[in-house]
Amino acid sequence: MELDIKLPHHTPDTVKQKYHRLSTARRLQRLALYSLLALLAACDNSIITPPPEPDQPPEANTIKFVALGDTGTGSENQYAVANAIQQTCETQGCDFALLLGDNIYDIGVDGIDDPQLQSKFEAPYRNLNFPFYVVLGNHDYGTAGLVAEKGQHQVTYSDISDKWRMPHHYYQFTRANTAFFALDTNAQFWEVDEKQEQVVADWINQSTAPWKIAFGHHPYRSNGPHGNAGKYEGISGIPYISGDGVKDFAENVWCGKADLYLSGHDHSRQWLEPTCQGTQLIVSGAGAKTTDLKGDNAVLFQADTLGFVHITITGGQLNAQFINVNGDVEFTHTVNKPL
Image (cartoon, rainbow, N blue to C red):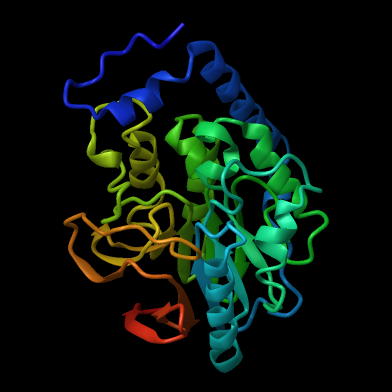
């Protein structure tokens, strides 16, 4: 039985097919699994705050990290970006990485012993000797982003990997003077994020860290093919597909409260000029693939080429460098705040 929802007449056929191919029974089954994951988080919030890393004491004043997403291909492009990161970290320093989802293309993994975790994560980044804090993307949740147990395999992989950090499908951690909030935007997309919204809002509101950074897979704004939340794929008014859940979560939880939101999903690098009530917006989804930039959001910088972002936070200053696959710094921007 297909969902009995009327789509706007101008909806592209590809979007109609994506929406209608999911039966009511199948969608309810998958959403029930998401609800189960949320229930598990409610039972023990301690599991979603990883312990401090021993190489970065909490009182340290400076942190340096890279952010990139949409990496999990095992391709030459992924290795090339990894090499550029290694080059940058050897000269500038890196304490850790943020991995922004779509970690294993095309449909995630079937268990913690899935060889793709080696070929599409461990091997490409073998020369990067620091932890990766990971969030889930739509591809990590299997076909159409609806197979919740596939996402859970990546969470469990944290138990056996020396490098992979994801204690839950959303979590928080603090490094130096910065609090980080790792989000499950796929749960937001499918609007099964009630517990996540409550918990993350409490974390952000209660945090006394001078800097607050949220990161997830889906963008709030983007000039890539997926576009802006609430109008993904250029279409508004379609349940789930338009991304209203992502937009609502952002505006209810982190907009105007976090200093920066980092995302992927679109395979490009962008620093959007519009903020979300003061929260800076960066897209860094060109860790292995690229897509065109056709949107009309104003930007400080954008590029549809492979690369990543390197961020340094010292005291009241955040400096971000957009670095390409050759290791060249293409754009630098600094944000200052009184502490």
